[in-house]
Image 1: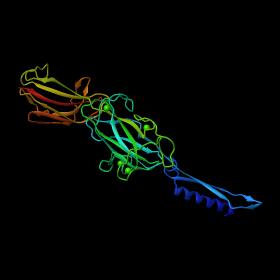
Image 2 (image 1 turned 180 degrees about the vertical axis):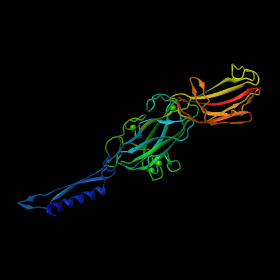
Image 3 (image 1 turned 45 degrees about the horizontal axis):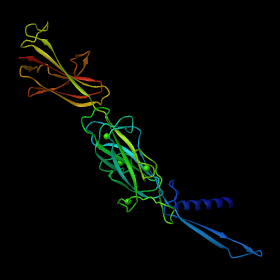
Image 4 (image 1 turned 120 degrees about the vertical axis):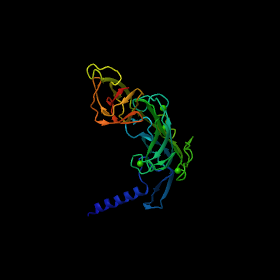
Length: 352
Ligand SMILES: [Ca+2]
Ligand SMILES: [Ca+2]
Ligand SMILES: [Ca+2]
Ligand SMILES: [Ca+2]
C-alpha cells in the first residue's frame, strides 16, 4: 500500500464514522442539533508567530415539518355488497428532520369525484385504520394494529396504513365510496402516546429550535398545515340475478305426445332459468326453491335436473346435476352463474 492510499483509507474510515454519528437524511440535519463553526486567526509580528485568536458561532437547526400520504396502488378497491373488512392501502412518509407522531383520520366523501374514474355514491361503514405491524404490505387481521396515530415515526420513515371498512348490502355494480386518509403531524411526545399539536414559530428566527411547516397540499388539506391527505375508493361489483319460470306440455293420457292438452293427468315440464347480467360478479351457491301448488303432483320418476342451459329461449334437458324434493317443494342448487350466463333447474309434474 502506498502512502497516498493509506491516507485515502484513513479518510474513508473517518467519513464513515461521521456518518454513523450523525446520519445524513434526505430530510436534512436533525432538528435541534447544533452546528458550531470555529475560526482561528494566526499572525506574526516582526516575522515571529504570535499567540493566535479564535472565534466560534453555534446555531440550532430548526424543525422542518413535512409529510406525504399516498395511495398504494393505482386502482380502485373492488368490493362485493355486504363485504366486511374491505381494505385500501396508503403509505405515510415523514419527510421532516425530526421524529414525529402523526394523527390519522379516515373520512368519507359525500358525492363528487372519487379517487379514480367514478363519482362517490355511497358511504362505507365501520371505517377503521390499521398500521402494518409486521411490515409485509398486507392487511393481516389480528396481527396488524388498530391505531388512531402513528407513534414516533422517524425522519425519512414510511409507515403502511390500511383503511378497513364494511360495505352495505344492496348496492349496484359501479357504486363508488371514496375515503380520504389524512395524517397530521404532532409532537413526538412520549413513545406510546400521541404528542401535542405542532405549532409553527411565528415572527423571526429564535436562538432555540423553531418550527416551520413545509408540507404541500394533498387531496383535502392545505399547504403548510402540518398535514397531508390522499384519497382512494371502493367500487362495487355486484351480481345482478334474474329468474324466469316457464312451462310446456309434454303429454296427456288421451293424446299422449301428439298435440297434448293440459287435461288432468297431463305431464307438464317446468323450467326455472337463472341469469346473471353481463359485467356482474359471478354469483355462487344459488338456491332455487319452488313450492308446488296443491293441484299438481311432482314427477319423481323424471327427477330434477340442475345446471342446464337455455338455447334460443328454449330450456334444454341437459342439466347434469340433481335436486331434491321435500315438503312438496322442488329444490336445486346452482354452484355458480357467471356474468352473462344462464343456468336452469328443470322438473316435471302432472295435473291432478
Ligand atoms: Ca361516500
Ligand atoms: Ca401486515
Ligand atoms: Ca409519541
Ligand atoms: Ca398540507
